[in-house]
Image 1 (cartoon, helix red, strand yellow):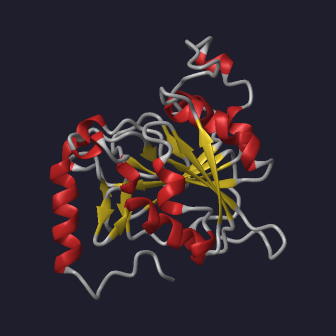
Image 2: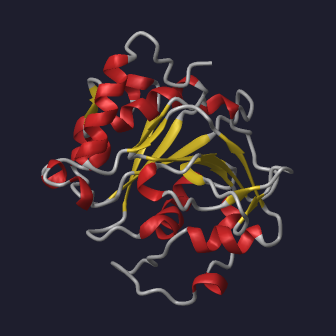
Image 3: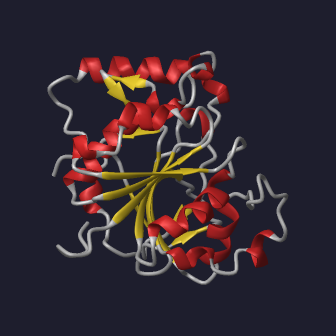
Length: 250
């Protein structure tokens, strides 16, 4: 993924969740800062983003927000500039979180990654810009959510309905225009701290109807680290494959 030497892509990391299913581990530390194989989940992403030329990363925060700058600093350790975007004491959901971060992301397409997933997906495979409004990385449905989210058609478009459903990995490239006129889809949400709180999925489904969402299928490793059991399983998997982890290296 490259936008040219003078126009490095920006990235957004969703890190504002309450981590309720991960308690008691998240009572004192936000889920993206939980260690996996010796480093916080979010650091796996920061390393990969830096490796593909990203320089500015916006980190959405809410729960235990003050721990992120204490743990990560300004990003200089990875050659990054970290910008912390506080949503307020209540997370704004995925759509509201993206809307809240747009002033820091600018007008160009940006990479998005959920802060509570782990994957060996190579971020360099992502397009610099989606053909439409968003390009999503899809994976096979995990055992805890076998129903999947969306359908990846043979032509590369993502549909809301179909026979073989895949799971959205929490990784993609988005245009800010995706949220243009979001109220026509969501209506008037209940505000939190004066900001709109709404999910991103209904917006994506609405844009899918016009063919504006594309995607690809990742068949490698991916984990939604949502519970202590899944965190333990990931730790064991990485321990068993030590020395064979590229973590997205090209």
